[in-house]
Image (cartoon, rainbow, N blue to C red; front, side, top):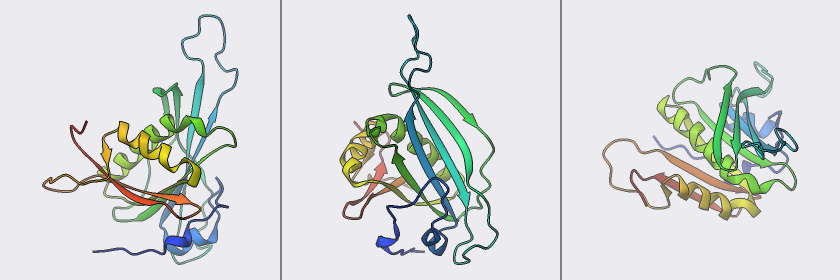
Length: 195
């Protein structure tokens, strides 16, 4: 089965509340990855955890095609903490309750001036994508700011994602990266043992 969705439905004004009505037209669920540095947190002489980056994954179920139906407020699903690019903590607030074959989107939006944490962001996105894939949930797109597209591509490469597919039997984990505003669009395939 092939799913086709309009490319221009990604919006620059999608915020962490995920209330954009255009999302409800095409998706069953949406996530927003909010990234920021915890300035001054754990900053003391001898600290091995400073600086610390906080990556919050905000989730909202949607009722595709039924605007405003079954309204559910967006809430923090998971929170990751990174020291430099190394994961040091995770708090999952609840299990995702997304039925198999439901189609969704992830927005990555670093706070102004904090786009240099894409190493942690890419790690969180890969973890989320793998979790969704293992539960047969369809991840349509990961949307990143246009000016951070190339940097996100580089970071995905660190996690063995490549623009070319390998010949594998069975399903293969993919991440469809799209820029916002539109203009850049690429599918990346997980390559086991890729260097």
